[in-house]
Length: 435
Image (cartoon, rainbow, N blue to C red):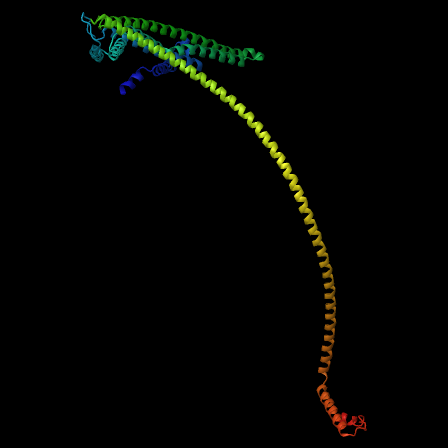
């Protein structure tokens, strides 16, 4: 894992390009680089900083690729480690032994494009058990290496495209600064500022075009060198593998069996093509049936929607009619109930009127009783006053006793006298009073 991390760091164009740009601008700011043209075109505006750093990143990527190509050229001269081809041709099972020879060579001299391609083709022969597809393997591995090598220049191509864009951006910014500083009323004072803006505009464009051209030619030279390397590897791999293995036609087997075997392989390939075509036809038929089913489902849904709408409309009309009839019946029933309630209320009003009349009569009687009670109270008051007056008299009891005695005496005299003599009450009046 540490080796993989070290390999990534050592091959990181962003890292090495950033360090190179940092070192370059450090030398400029520390006045180690004092060339006026260099300073003017690389460190007078932020856009120039960006263009220069991107150039260093692109050059780092090209340099890393260049060293890889040179390293593969050196390893290509050391060979692949395979044994020389002799008159005795090898069986397909010998591919494992040849792969072990390549691994031993890689351990001593390092990996290369040639050893990778040989290992891939031998592995295919080992799995398939036949070298009949050697030509196809040679073409496919060569194409894969070519595509992989071309893909390694992706970052450089992007930077070559982006640097002129940044230059045009600096041009726009510089022209904008010049137009912003232009003052027609004070032309002499604003002219240096306008010239400064135009300087930024033209310098950034010139720097971007120059650096992009340098980077493009460096990438082109490296790519041409790598193409030559890939062509050389293809020739060496073809020379080392072609004629090394024993083909089926060379095994000494009956030619009829070989022919039948080849026919069977052709038939199998044809059957595979037919099966693939049939599968495609089935896919198309299933897709068409799905489309038809979706269309039928849509039509059925539309028809069902229309039918449901009509049915719901009829049901709504029926319910509306039923509601109208129920409303009429309810109104009639309510009218009859209201009439009965009104009659009951009228009777209740009449009863209340009679009750009110009785209450008026009872009120008059109660008033008379109250008046009589008032008279009795007055009489009782007067009697109490009289009784009080009598009680206050000094000789009230004595008078009553004398009166009672007089009445008793008269009663006894009347009983003693003859019937014809009248009783003279006036004679004893003085005595009685004296007594």
